[in-house]
Length: 42
Image (tube, rainbow, N blue to C red; front, side, top):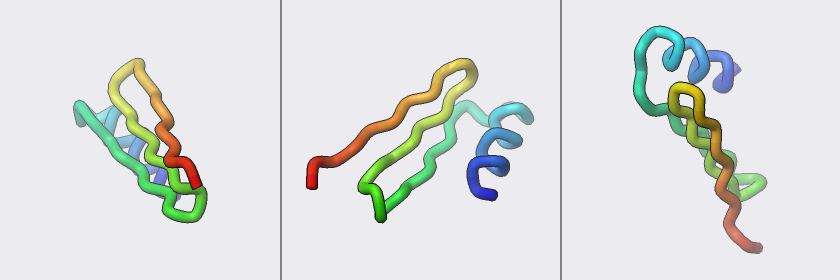
């Protein structure tokens, strides 16, 4: 659900979207044509 909202925001002109996943200790960063995942060591 959150991913769909982030993708829709990017499609509608947002320049940056962040999704935080504390359970997997990850941050997903969405920009037009760029997708990145950063993980923190446990």
